[in-house]
Each structure stands twice: as C-alpha cells, then as structure tokens.
Length: 267
Image 1 (tube, rainbow, N blue to C red):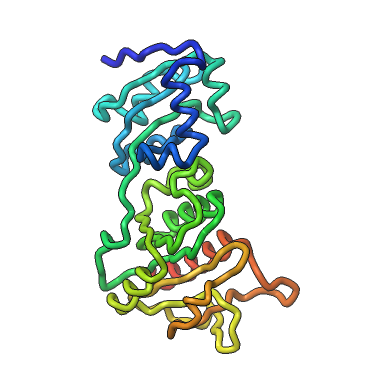
Image 2 (image 1 turned 180 degrees about the horizontal axis):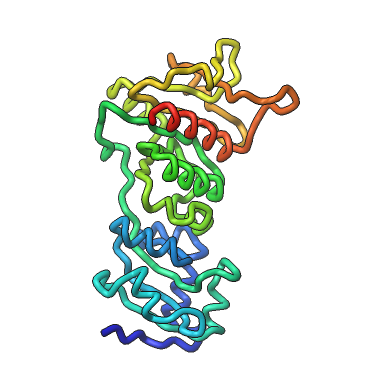
C-alpha cells in the first residue's frame, strides 16, 4: 500500500531540487534526470520503460488511485504528496492534470541503432528549439517513423518544453543523437538513400518521389537551413510543394509533411 510523504512547504529540500531539474539543463545532465508533467506524459514514460524515481501530486487535484493508474506501485517510485500551494509553484501548464514525475534519462547513442531492411528515418540537423523537437517527435510517433536522429543537436532532448510539446511521444519514439560525421557514416554503411530539404536547381518535388525501402529525410536548422556538410554529399534534394508567395515552413511543419508522405507510401 502506497503511503506518500506529505510536503507542505516549497522550502523542502526535495522541492528545491525538483525546481533545479525542471529549470536547468546542466542539473538534468549532471544527474541524468528528466521532469515530466501531465497524466499522458507520465504514463508514456513509464510504459516506455523509463526508470521513475519520484511521483509528485496534490490530492486536491488528483487522487492516489488515478496516480497509480499512470505510474503503478511496481515502478518502485517514491510518491510525494504536496499542498496545493506547493504544486501551483511547480506547475508549468495551467488547467492540466497535476502530476509530475522525475525519471532517469536513457542513452541515445547513435551506435545503438540497428540496421533493418525497411526503415525510414527523420534526421534533424542542429535542431535548436525544444518546442520544435517535441512537435517533431509527436508527429514521428503518430506516423510510425522508424527513428528520429538528432545530428549535432543544439537543445536538450529532455527539456520540459520538448516533453510537453511532444505530449509524451519523446519517450516512445526511438531517438538517437550523434555528430554529423557519425550520421554520415551510418547512412553510408547502412546504404540508406538520403533526401535533403534543400532548395536546389536539381531538387525533386516530394510528391514525385518514390520512397525507397531504406530512406532518411534531413531537415535543417530553424535559422540557417541545411548545413554545408550535407550539401557536399551525394544526397538527393527534395522540395515540399508550396505557393509562390511562401518559400519556407516552420521546421516542425515541414517535418510533419515529409513524414506524412513517407508514411503514406510505406503503408
């Protein structure tokens, strides 16, 4: 039977540490920890096999039975019940299910990716904004993309904004990180046909491409687009059909369109 510890003050040492993990990337990296908020996010992290260290909730907003439906006692997590005042100081999302978890990060080394004869990868090169990363992970999860590969990532994979905008998908979609050089090597060694979202004179329309059995689709940064190191390779260029008045899309929107067409053809 779960008997949560009750925390009444925001000056409690565990609450102070929780705020550090929530707010500071260096604290999360140092302790290999993440913070997630919301019923769905907490449930998806647990079901994806993440180690859950703490569960934090307020019984004024959610009962222990509902908490245990998301993160059951079998998780061996420590359950912390806090006052409404403390929880309101912690919440990042208003009018949401008031439950938090603190869990242990997983490894996302590119070397752990295993080759397959039928794959479609989305490669995000130097993604900068956690919100865009989360939105991309959500679309990739929904559309059944084999994995998302972060090449030279510039943002924290476990930033609370990334988790929030992914609605928990960041825990479920296979995610790998590596240098540009390592990603190029993987594409070559696995003989994966690669497409760049780059406006080039020889670019092909996305709708005219027949998606191969093994493919990778590269999107660039929000500010600068595709890095020159990609352009020097023998990769194909692809364009998303748009009206003449618009020549670019938000990176998460562009990624969603690419992944939808890939998923449509693979289906």
